[in-house]
Image (cartoon, rainbow, N blue to C red):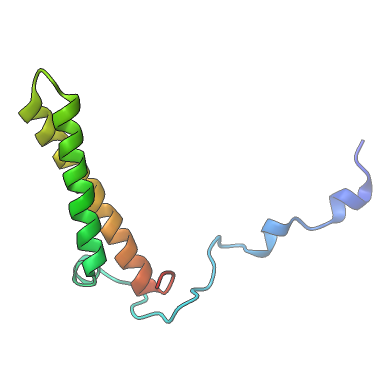
Length: 100
């Protein structure tokens, strides 16, 4: 059986009722839209996008032996979408003040 002291102690996660923390950096846009986030892309974001996309095309080329061009195109499309989402997430975090 549990003692009464364990049941009366507050759980540490109950202090944050909404599940988010205050931003560590200054907030530049509290509610950024799609175009705001895309305009905020930096050179590092574009470099990451090209690296991820290029790497996924190469992966598709080397793994998809019977249908190399089709496999490379499919992996490139998936990698390009993943790279865009990665850059968008970084840009959104910078605008909201959660990343530098």
